[in-house]
Image 1 (cartoon, rainbow, N blue to C red):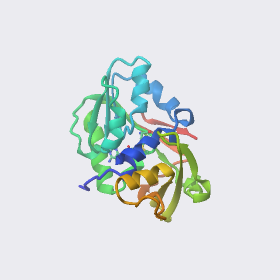
Image 2 (image 1 turned 60 degrees about the horizontal axis):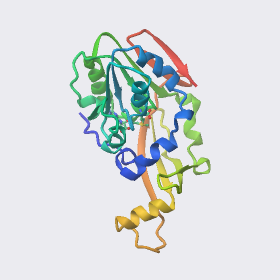
Image 3 (image 1 turned 120 degrees about the horizontal axis):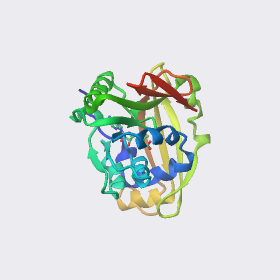
Length: 243
Ligand SMILES: C[S@@+](CC[C@H](N)C(=O)[O-])C[C@H]1O[C@@H](n2cnc3c(N)ncnc32)[C@H](O)[C@@H]1O
């Protein structure tokens, strides 16, 4: 099985501190789909839970059952753990050994696409199957390649978010290996003075030097078939689309 190393984007303390500003709650069009399903399920596993904001909100709304967030990136989980009435597990999905414990497993924010190798996908789905009780449901979504979102992943579409110190950080996404019908590879480049200070603190960039304060990372995501962004409900025999 492929050894899963968390992306730097999700492991690095500074980069994870930008995550929730980059993907703010009011821009999430997927929560309306997931929330009612989670609220009506007894025990829920959020696989690839990231900073845990979905389960935080679920508990806040009064869910009283078992909530468990799973993520291989400890940087993300560190942000999730401020709520201690939720279980947090540091692992990739393929490696967990839950057995008939959850009524619902969700994988939101395209997290499923971070699993790229066929073997890894097979083992991850087997983990979900094992983790679910009889009649349980797996809800996740993937991007639709025909929506061609990757064509907008260009530096001229960069976004600027406010970092934890109040300073602006520019985030540019750029395709580096074009879509081959299956996988696309892209970089995120973070640029800002706070990053320069981070690099200086790590002695990677001498104070006052002309080095560019950028953190750059290549990631590969599998793009699966669908219409806009498909939501798959395995076990319920039905699906819905989020646009
Ligand atoms: C784009 S973030 C989405 C986070 C969160 N679900 C949300 O909707 O905001 C993708 C997350 O999936 C996690 N991830 C990547 N590979 C994974 C795997 N094999 N098993 C479980 N989670 C994984 C990453 O560490 C990251 O936190």
